[in-house]
Amino acid sequence: MSDSKQVLLACGVNHHTAPVAIRERVAFPADILSRALADVTGNGVAHEVAILSTCNRTELYCNTAEPEGVVQWMANFHSMEPHEVRPYLYLLPQDQAVKHAFRVASGLDSMVLGETQILGQMKNAVESAQEAGTLGLLLNKLFQRTFSVAKEVRTATEIGASTVSMSAAAVTLAERIFPSIGQQSVLFIGAGEMIDLVATHFAARKPRRLMVINRTVERAREVANKFGGEAASLSSLSEVLHEFDIVVTSTASPLPIVGLGLVERALKARKHSPMFMVDLAVPRDVEAEVGELDDVYLYTVDDLGEVVQAGHDARHGKVEQAEVIVGANVGQFMHWLEGRKAVPTLRALRDHAERLRRHEMDKAHKRLAMGDEPQAVLEALSQGLMNKLLHDPSHAINEASGNERDELQQWVTRLYNLHNDQ
Image (cartoon, rainbow, N blue to C red; front, top):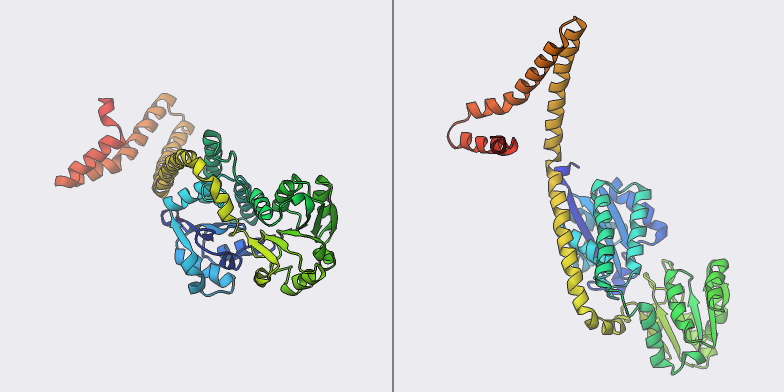
C-alpha cells in the first residue's frame, strides 16, 4: 500500500454504541490477540493495525484502503454476519480517527470521565501490535502523538481529579443493598488490575471477610495479602460461593464461569439470603440468567454507568479545556499526515538530483585522474550540475504558452524563492 493511498481508520464498538451482549462477542482476549493481528494484516485487509479490547470497548486502529473490508473481517473473525455487528460499529476515517484516539487516551470517551486505566490499556495494545509486527510509520506516529496529548490533557486540566471510578461505583451500589459493608463477606474472582482496584475500595470499608480466588493461587495470594484476605483456587468456587454476600468478578475467561445452576445451589445453601454480584468482565463472567433470580442483585459494567455519571457535571469546564487541546493536536497531526502524500514526489526529486550529481562527479574524477587542474575541474563540476538541475524547469517554461506559462513561472518563483534573491 503506497503512502498516497493510506487511510487512517478507527473501527469499533464501545459502551456508547453497543450493549455488553454485543461487546463481549467482538472482544479480543489476550490469548487470541496476536493471532487476530496477524490475520488482519496477513489477509491484506490492513497494512497496519492495533487492537484495543477492554470491558468498555473493542477498537481497531488501521492503515487501510478498505474500511468495509475491516468490518467484514471483524465479523468473520468472530463468526458473525456483518449485519449483526454493523449497527453498533463506528467507522472513523482520517481526522475523525485521530480525534477519537486522542479522546480515548485522555479519558474523555470513558464511562468514567477522566479515568487513567484506559491509557495503560492503549499502551498495552500498542506494545502487542509492535510485538506482532503490525505497526508501521503511520500508527507509530499516531500513538506517539496520542500518548503525548493524553499527558498534556491530564497535566493541564487535572480532569482525572476526584473521578468517580468503576471501583467506587461498585461499593456505592453494594451499600444500597447492604447497610454496612463491614458486616458482609466479599469474594473477588480474578486477580488482575481491575480486581486489585475494586478490592482496594471494598477493603477500605473493612468487610467481615475478604477472599480472592483465581486460576493461579499464587497470584490470588499476592492480591489477598495486600488486604489481609484469604486466597484460593478457582476450582474451589462451587464450594465457597454460598459463603459470600458480595461477589465481584473480572477474569479473561472467554466463557461464563459463574453459571445459573452454581448460583442457584449457593442461594439454597444461603437459605435465599441476598447476594450482590458485580460482573466487570467482557466477555461476561456471570451468565445473564443469574440476574433474573429473586435473591441476586447482578450488575454489569453498563449498569455502573448511572453511578459514575453523577460526577461528570462538576468536570464540565475541564472537559471543554481538554477538547480544545485535542482539537489543536488533531490539526497538527493531520498537517503531518497530508505532508506524507508528497513523499513519493520528494523522493523521486531527490533520486533524480542524486543521479545528476553522481554523473558530474564521475566526470570530475576522470578529469582529475587525467591530471587536469583541480580548480578548472571544480568549475566545470559546478557549471555542469547547475545546468542539469535547471534544464527541466527552464525547458518546461520555454515550451509552455499562455496561462500555463504564467502559472509555471509563478510556481518556479515560489519554489526557488526568486523574489527574495532579487
